[in-house]
Image (cartoon, rainbow, N blue to C red; front, side, top):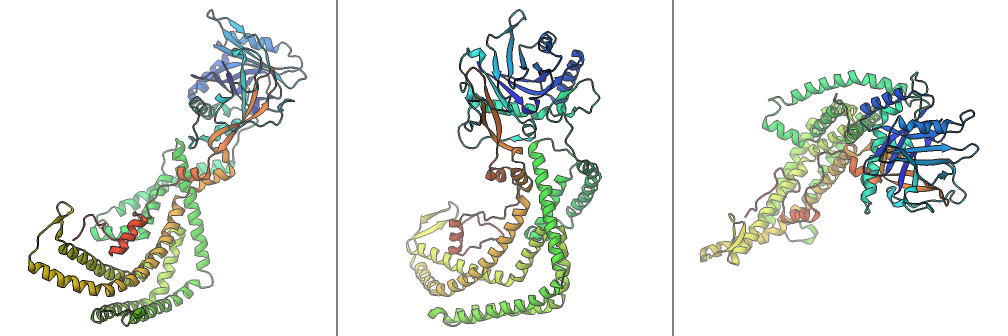
Length: 615
C-alpha cells in the first residue's frame, strides 16, 4: 500500500510541532496544511482545531509530529511521539530532521486492535525535503501526469508494500487560490481524478486556518503560507468598504429604470416592436441586466458566479473607458462639425451613384435584352424613391450637427452604445436600399414560386397545403391553357426581375456585412471574459486544468519525492468556459440555408421567420 503525503513547501523549515491536516477519505493519502509550533497546550490545540473545523467545514485533525533539529531540544522527537496518545489517530506520521543533514526521517505509526501504536520496520529518509534534489535525481524531470496515483512504483526499491511512501510537495498559496477544472482531452485515471479535487478542495476550504500569523497574540503559533503576515491591500479593503453604498445606490436607480421601462406606455405593441429591432435599446437592456448582476447585494459564493461578476465588471469598465476615449477624440478640433459637413455630401454622392446605376439598368445592362415596359416601370419607381430620400436628407441637414453632438455623448455609456447607435444610424441612412431590396426580393420571389407552381401544373401535380407534400392532380384544358400563358409571361419577365433583385441584393449584403461587423464588435466586448483571460495570462495557476509532477529526489532506499506543478487551463477552454452569454447576433441559418434563401428570393433577415411553404 502506497501512502501519499501532500506536504507544503512553506513548512520545510518550520519549527518543531504538530502536523495539522486531513486524511483523504477513501484514499491512503494525507494533506498537511500547517505546523503548530512548540510550546503549546494540547487542550488549546484541540479547541483551536475544533473551532477551525466548524469555520472551514473540513475534517481537520492532527496527522502527526514534525521535529526540527535545534540546540537544547534533543528529546523533542520522543516527546512529540508521546503526544499520539493525546491525539489518537489510526495512523501517526512522525517526521523529523537530523542534526547537520538536510534530509528528514519518516516513521508511520499504526494502531493495533488494542489501540497501541506499532512502528513500521523500515525507516525512510528524504534528501532535500523539496528544497534540494538528491545526487541521483537532481533536476530529473518526471512526465506530465494528472494525479499521484500513477507513481506508486517509481523510484522505490526495497521494503514491503507498507513501507512505500510518496511525498508530493506543493505550493500552498497557488493550490489554495486555484480552481481545478475537469480534463477535456485524454482518459484520466478515475482514482486520480477523485483524489485531486479533494486535495484542492481541502486546501481551498481551509482558508480560515491561514488567517493566524506570527503577529497574532494567540496561544497557538503556526507555520503556513501566510504565517509571516497576511496578504492584503489597504486600497482593496477601502474599495470593498466603499462598494457597499455604491451598489445600493446603483441598485435603487436600476430598480426605478426597470419599473419605468416596464410601464404600460412603453409596452404597447409598436413601441415594443421598435425597441426590439433597435440595437441601442437591446444593448441598453443588456447592460441594465449586467449592472443588476454586478451590483447585486448577494455575495458570490460559487466560483462560476464570482467569475461571471468579475468578467462583467471588467468588461463594463473597459467599455466605458473606450467610450470616454472616443468622446475625448470626437469633441476635439471640431470633429463633430467636420463629420456633419461630410455626411450630407456623402448621401448626395450615394444617391447620384444609385441614379446612375438605375439609368444603366433601364437601358441594356451588359448587352442583355430586358423587358422594356417592366424595366421602365421598375426604374422610375426606384428613381422616385431616391428623389424622396434625398429630399428628406436635405430637409434634415440643418439638424445633423446637433443630432451628432448629442449622439456622441452616448459614448460616455460605453463604446458598445456608440457602435449600436452607429448601426441604427446606418440602418436609417440606408433605409431606401433596404426598401429596394425588399421590393426586388418580393417581386422575384413571387415570380420564382409562380413558375414552380405552374411547372407542377404541367406535370399534373399540385402542392397539398394540409399534408405539406406534392400530390397528383388532374387539370382540364382551360386550366392548362391559362397556366401556359401565365408561365410564358413569368418566364420572359424573369430576367428583368432577377437582374434588379441581384443588384439590390448585393447592395443590401454590403450594408448587412457592415452592420454585422458592428454587432460582432459589440458582442465581443460584451461576452469576452477579460478577467478570466487576465488571470490566464498573469496568474495562470488560478485556472488549473490538471497537475504535472517533477521528480525532486529518487534514490534507492528512500521515498519518491515529487513536486506538484499546476497545468494552466487552455486559452480556448478559458474563453469557452467563462464567456458571458449574450443575445445572438449571428445568423441562425447555415451558409447553405442562406444561399437557398438568396436563390429563392426570401429575405435574409425577415421580421417573421417563414414556417410554412407558400404556393
